[in-house]
Length: 265
Length: 175
Image (cartoon, rainbow over all chains, first blue to last red; front, side, top):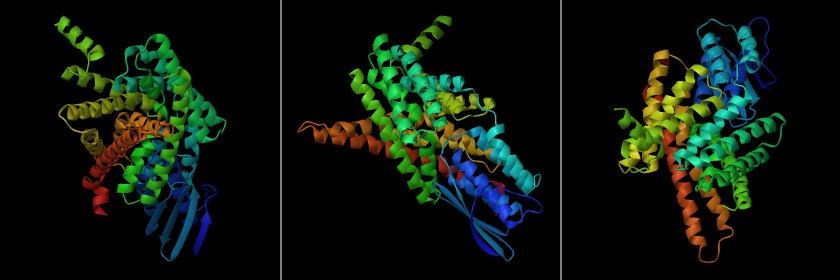
């Protein structure tokens, strides 16, 4: 058997066929990529799981928006491709997906149970309440401001600006707005509130305040993953990541510059 | 004793970069706060938030010490990222796990030169409206900042990747 398919979802039933194993590996790879893993982690997870489920060889090829997997078991081979959605960072979901991989590798979970466990991750993994995330993101950006030499008068305005920016990001992503327009809108809102608030509070570091308030948009995980992927011998994925990072930073700066012009910084 | 502590605290919170230890503590503290905040944004498990704080504080402390001894930003960031990556890798190896380095990534987030990247790109925006004669200085300034960003990211990425190549798990070493 030698087939090429596009992944629809992770299905199972009865004894695991090569196709079931391929779909399981793709589902794990897709989830890990979307939740902030680098290509090496995705590769290790998929290959270890395929080997544990009886494959004699497994090859994984990660792209920015797709994963291709080739499995062999005896005389049978299969090639599957799966789409990857919006890249983000969600460590608890990534941890849960890795747990499933660890359990399959240890022989404590079969293919069907692993599929069921994976399906439960998005809805079943705990998450912090939105207000708490906004609050802590604001604090993080204020801390960035202090690291950049911002005075204390700018601390609260940056906190509020970044907090509002994070709430706006959450709402716009939930309503499926264009990602890059969302980046520009969040950058503008956060910088405008931080800059205006800083001026009212008497801060003398308005430029630093406005920049600090937009740092929630900097795709730090993607930046680090791009470097790690390039070093790990996956330049195609690294280039894809870098291209997207540059566009995010461009749109973020567009929002920032617009806010600074309006405030008069 | 209490007065000395109060004086030190005041220097940490309001002192300048000229006072060595208060400056290190200040940078470490706010680096830790930034890492912990991003830990929540990245949906880190609650039990790991304190570790995120520690990772951010460690990287910022190492980077600040490096910079205070004359290292450039990429060099100091490389050393700091290598330290946290080694700590993180040793921890995962003990756990014999296949998963990636969560703590190292979150610990390095406060060192990502996002503000420098924004300033560099802002310089490019300003370059479009530069008056004759000023465009070379503006362009060079923006380029310089973007080069430092690229070098810093390359240094951090290399430092994060190095321990995974050197310290392999028993499972991978056997393969």
